[in-house]
Length: 100
Picture 1 (cartoon, helix red, strand yellow):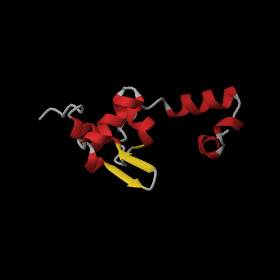
Picture 2: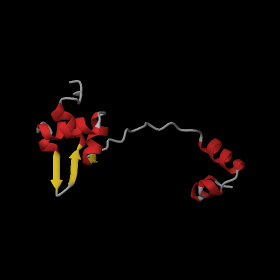
Picture 3: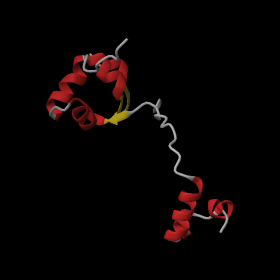
């Protein structure tokens, strides 16, 4: 089989021999690994989410919320509490800054 034909074939449809032929025909090329940076915000929900984020009990999480230290990270609509995890950690002083 030609290398181009093998390239168009799905991996799960190849036999072991075809896969080896493809790898040997091309030579194993190492590609530079590009780290994927997730820029999307992470959120936690509710008092239980705050407790998991800070690694504390639910009563302590409630005290953290009531203290006002992380108010800028909290959006509350009725009973629903949405917390921007990164901002909450930063406001609480738990997040370590990157090296400059």
